[in-house]
Length: 312
Image (tube, rainbow, N blue to C red; front, side):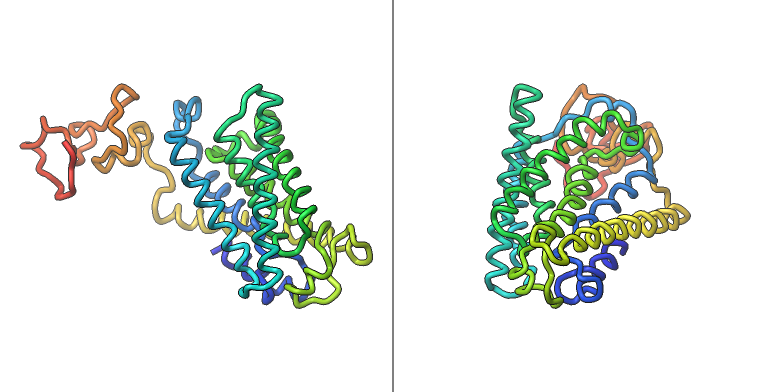
């Protein structure tokens, strides 16, 4: 709900802010990044053993998902003008340019500081590039998309690898996917850089407000940067407040957090299921303790089947 209203304020040609405040936004990922962080804050962090070591479960699936994500992202950025025109073509081109540049920059930084590239790091760089270019996809030239890719591959890398480990405020939120860096930082960066690099002719193709331009093109461009910052800060504040209200209301109805003993065995195990048959990796589901259906054959007679398909 928080994201829906925020997007309605700023989306496409019809958003209130687009018409009244001359904000340069195709899609702004500040509206999709702080709500998840607030949702993580209210239930609290994971159990200690998961926070100490929680490596990626399947890197091959991460790569497959990243490829699908990149392809789909080009589609929805290119579809923002709702017509196949020059602006749409520029959006698709810039999306790929920025994502590829950010991908490479993040990988280079991993090599420089850690002496080896990282698959997960490369995917993170791709995501930050996609997020950063989204507000500007159809509004900037190709050279600006490269600059934005360099920024989106380096600034979120710095906040994730350096700032996150030293700032207690960030460590208080159990952000397992690094959303604050890949979406919040990259989204805010993209919104501000849009106000810097937006090209007047491309703005005229997409935006209903005339004479829109980025800061590098002079005129009213410098004021545009300030408008972008104010717009991003409002969206951030809106999402924090509204999402907190939603979480607090829900907490009065249902618990936001599972009991500790259920967290120890996993949310799938408390339903009598196991996603992966990995033995020796900690406490397992025990039907005698948790009183739920089990696929343990030793209890087959005492505890009848739940009717779900079980693999023995």
